[in-house]
Image 1 (cartoon, rainbow, N blue to C red):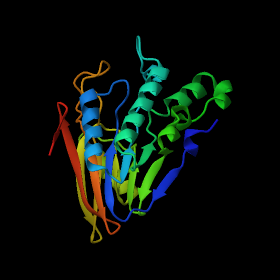
Image 2 (cartoon, rainbow, N blue to C red; image 1 turned 60 degrees about the vertical axis):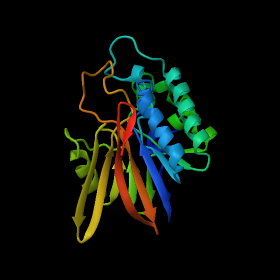
Image 3 (cartoon, rainbow, N blue to C red; image 1 turned 180 degrees about the vertical axis):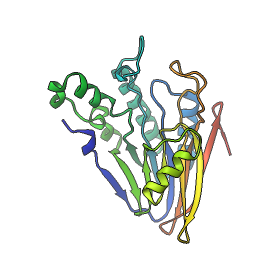
Length: 245
């Protein structure tokens, strides 16, 4: 079995270009209008790089928190492949990276906890999704030009920005993370150098059946590079299916 811990970090050198970063779609709990807005934005901008920054699938039935009837993991996998196909169709030349999130590891953890004897029969999540069919590269994280990192994130705060502060302090570089379902851009200057970190929000339903009115915001991030350095970075908010810019 290819373990999630063996899904590697990737590096990319990019001199000029746009990077669009979306995360936390949580198929099958996606917000169809928010996802459509994200795809339409990518189609219009034709970014050099698209980063799907984790928790694209939910693996709801494999959660230790699951109560009652849920979704079949195979249905989620099928929908995720349809999503990748849709993005690739409108952005044929973009480099697309899929960063693993905590929900992508649910299948592996479920097998290891419930039936470790079968672990050797299970492939890693990116092999199961067959992301290579869409020229998508799965990874643990993506670092661009050695000073800009995209990761799903593990360091949480209970308000927008607190996770960004923790992740930036831990990485000591600029970057983007998901996981919190909140939107925020945090900026700091250390030793005369400017750093930023963006929490990229989510593209899932803001009122899913397993939560009651959570403090989440829909959106994604855009980072513009020039001469190998970040020229501009921003959050893009989505409200009721419409991009607010």
